Image (cartoon, rainbow, N blue to C red; front, side, top):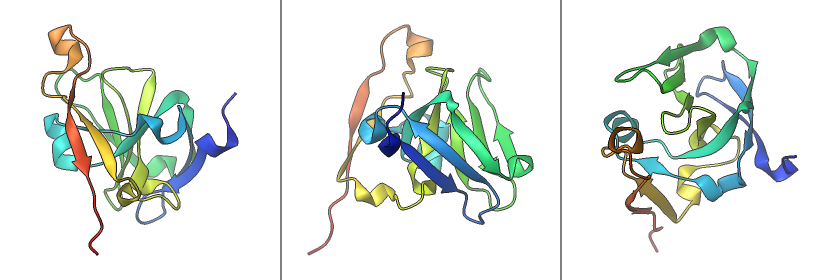
Length: 141
């Protein structure tokens, strides 16, 4: 059973899409990725199981995008264009949830964010997920 602290509500920029996400291990799964689409999108994500994202409002506004192998499915609001979550290629039983969409959470709340090597994706290489680096945020004093 998920802890109450692992449950978060969120929304896209215009508020048309609202959802509830139950996170796997809270913010311990925080990450970014170097794969082309992930890199260009620039989002910081956390993990939720497939049944762990419940669309509360605006399901008809959600649009999806698939490319390459078609395994990953990226969801965004068709009105404001904000990416809310995606079904992972590395683990199709999980979603990556955009932390910037979670109520009261900002990607800038985290001093360090692990960055994983999506260019050498484990589904392509047969290897394991490799950490490529760390993204750091320091406030100006």
